[in-house]
Length: 535
Image (cartoon, rainbow, N blue to C red):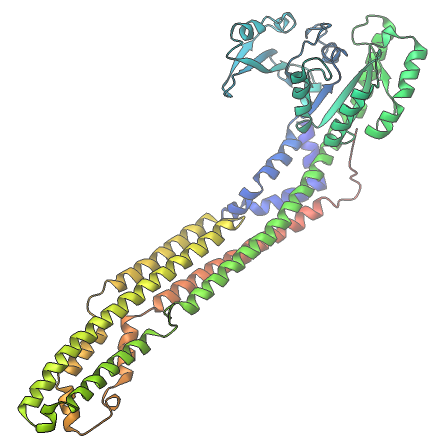
């Protein structure tokens, strides 16, 4: 297609394409997905026909005008009452036919293909609607013609504005958001009334000055009247379009004068619209690239903020994981203090007992020390189990809070790399599984050490040595070392470090890609000699 080929050769599109090529790598498909709609819209502007609607108040002769423009006079029904209650779209195809699109109140639709174009004029296809009026209504008609104009533009015939059926006006006003250009047809008998100006203003608000004004039914007025109408419409022309001249034609007259005028207008239309299609499409592409850039800059800021937030969450978790949320005291300190407190309490109890006072070297004192030690041992073991379980429960809760914060931050990111997301899920699951496994351990190294310590007549020997300092007889370094083995959280540090590396790497890579894309897109719309085109 010449249009697509011509645009592809422009520096604007080449630079834009260089930017899009950056997104071709599998590793950045999560970024490309964000801008897929922008990419598709620009691709459509390059390749697909643009939408050109024929608009005006009812009975101004839009259908007759389109029939003649497409060299198919009499193709569409022409009646005094409003006859086009839906949009009729015209597309290019080698084989000519039309399709009727029916739709019910639930949005269900079906197509009826009609090979005979003459049935468009006879409205024969409307019988289906009449028979099923409580079920289906005609939503639109698609007409396929072998006409070169339709290679460039999809033409739309619209319901008349300002008719007694407000539904018909709403159908037309709704497509203002969908079209690229419009031919506004005035009726020579009533051109330039207040309702028309309001509708033209609404159209202008949607598509700017991409409007072409045309006066129809000029054969019913004399030349002076037509000149007066054109003069009256000059203010419309200055405000709403860039065309140099407003033409007055007749879509139905067979008089040679009006046949020539229509042909002259048609050539002018080609010069102003059809032959400028590439330039017009480039204008639209430039605007879409600008919109692309706005979205891109916002994405860069949001993505950077999100990833920085994730790294902050990782650091907070790493710094807080070895403390009990309630006390802020380390587990090593709690267990060490528990052991010393219980042994000192037992030591004091025995020293104050009558058995000790009566005979400090008796077998009865040794038995009493042994029996008291067993009770303290059980008590210490139970308390260590409780402390350990409580600590691991707190650690699991803190881990769950961390997981939730990280996932919320990740989901809030405008880009979500699938591979990163999966790997984070695996690492988070691994951390949680390791904590749960640690919690379920029934035999702790520290408990074994305490058993070995206290079953070796520890208190009795302490009493015999006349040593009043219990702590001096216990190797607290061993206690701390064993507790460290029992609660080995190094795996969390390793996993958190891996998460941080993953997120930082993604952050650096993604932001580099976004920055390159930003550069190429900016370059593409700064090409000299490409002016924004309007009709």
